[in-house]
Image (cartoon, rainbow, N blue to C red; front, side, top):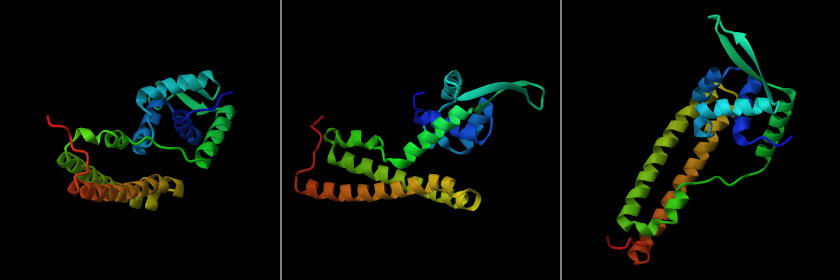
Length: 190
């Protein structure tokens, strides 16, 4: 059987906690703010559940809820749990390069004037400050209410954002020096 991908692992991880119906899965995704660290969407939940059921990694059964309405509830099969454990081990064992959209901007800064570059990166740093503040509050909340792995879902991005902020400051300092020396890449006249 082939390996599962990251989206499948995220979804199967939820089903490993307890059997759930798709709406309940969506609710947990929102509560845990999983869209910040996965690309999982409501439409992908349904598609993935169908695919994983076809592969024998999840199984569904129809149950009646409290209002006597039929709901399709999914749970992880032993084969699904085995695939999930293998993927978690792989993800926790090796660093992978993330995709940083700002790299596209960096490779094309020649399109902007020096003033535009400075303004954009001031705004970028401001957005980092807002996220650092938000994740700091999240970390405090998680430390008071959640197990350590959940806390790390806030701590790790916080460390990365702080490092990114340090990088931005260093870049802008270097860019400013080159600008004064006439070496920064100004945009062509418009």
